[in-house]
Image (cartoon, rainbow, N blue to C red; front, side, top):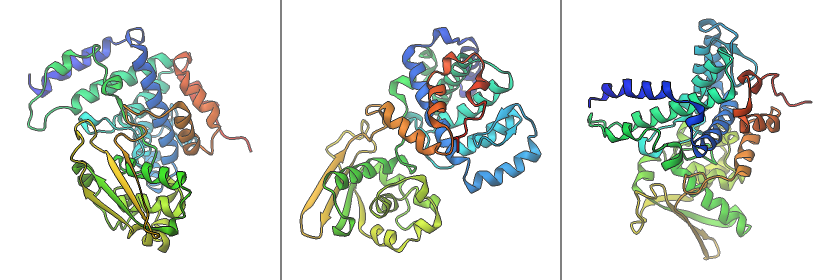
Length: 356
């Protein structure tokens, strides 16, 4: 089967999909990804890149039928999908599908939401469209670049759900997925032993080849480069005792204390004893203290990976930080019960602004 020949099959499958045919596990996984994507889109909507895009979108995509995640702007469905899609990915904080090496929800959710709002559909219709789009996207994401395609993937539609198996990875930190495990290791050790960063001599990261290929910037010059830097991620944790999107700015990057802490961090390939197909982003962090003692922690699958998922409380905490200027508790509850909404516009209207 040629690659283009699969498109009618995918289209027919998506068109015929109904909410009643969706397994509960797929619906629950989709709601988690929807909550996560909504959150990172709200946070990303304040970014300067999105502000610039918003200005041009007002001229090109005038309309009022679809909401943007800044909760200030309405556009045509195409305009809202474009702006929200950019906002959902600008922080590189969105979910990941490893077999296709793609960010699935940030592609599908903004489009599904914009269309659902424009036709005033219900929550079940939005979820069905979201899941149909995700599953088709994951199939397409696994097309071999040499134009060889495994036909059996299409035949597995409605039998195997990518949302469930293997599932999507969610992020605790707004940096490349390859820095997630190391950041979690360092946070765990510093917290457990109540370490003073000033007492740390060095931080050594033993990682998989996949991680080394992904984290290119030992000396990042911009916030975007910093998101693909092991040195920045761990130095931020040491300097600010956290790694959030609030550190993704030039001022934080140029902080002399952070720059000094970056020089403490090294990264090298290892972990040859692990099956790296099962644990592509496993990491071992070893902290050497100035008193000569060392502390070490290994994480095979960071919190948020399909085989080590975030708890609902952890997802809520991420949502609260990303949506801190909104009534995030109300929003979270609406998204968690999305399938019960008789009209999807009640998801965002009235605008859930935090009362002063």
